[in-house]
Image 1: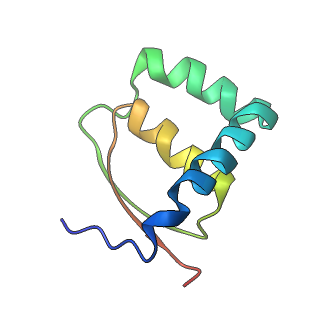
Image 2: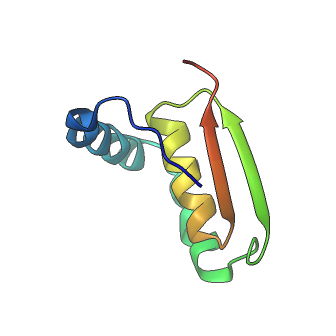
Length: 77
């Protein structure tokens, strides 16, 4: 699978925004705490087409930690 990154120079800002979401999104943190231990999506392939922003990027990270094999595409080009 190929990754298409428009501007790699924006990566540090993206990581900073995801860190913000992690700090201020208690529900996602709860899911992360539980799912990273129980791995409910282990062995499941998922396709996620979603408006990508910091909060949804954090959700994608959580799904990966929960065991999912993900293909992600943004719907907000």
